[in-house]
Image 1 (cartoon, rainbow, N blue to C red):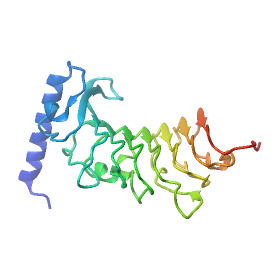
Image 2 (tube, helix red, strand yellow; image 1 turned 120 degrees about the vertical axis):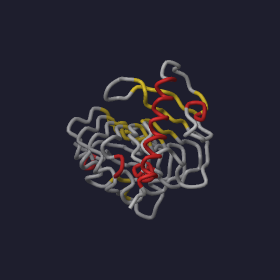
Image 3 (spheres, rainbow, N blue to C red; image 1 turned 90 degrees about the vertical axis):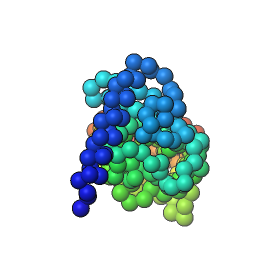
Image 4 (cartoon, rainbow, N blue to C red; image 1 turned 135 degrees about the horizontal axis):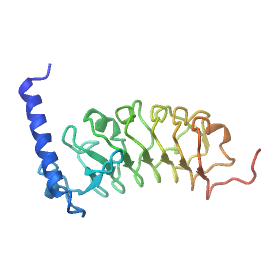
Length: 224
């Protein structure tokens, strides 16, 4: 059982964090994260942005591009209003999204493009299933495996996902039902892969997909 004093400290730190955001919300510029809040002692850039749901300032966008952490994820404050997180060009091999979920972060946009991620572990996005609307995993190694079919069920819980980018992952084929559960998906990018045909059977799930990008693949003909 969690000690009550520990819980009170968390609440107090979160309140201080929110007050600092309110104070800085009028200064809309990227700055070192520790300048935004002492709770964010990380070598990243931060900015105050609006919450997508209300349009009011007070949320945080965090840019940790080219930053390498000792663990799979940075040590972030529990419950912090971080809605956007980017960590590109950092040699990341493991998805930190499960760690974010345990911290109760309302992340809406997650960008881990241009890394070395080869697989999506079980329950990777479970903690973000309500908040995540944009997921970018471009230029990783998701298709670089012995199995020629890219297969995962980890996108299924993401019912509010609107954008998914899997470009540049050496994907040769996509399993049927990859997007099952992603009813709100609007944009699906699979550019610069090794697809030989349009993955028609893999698009079941979205109710109104409006943009499917297949540029720079090996598709020679279309099957109706």
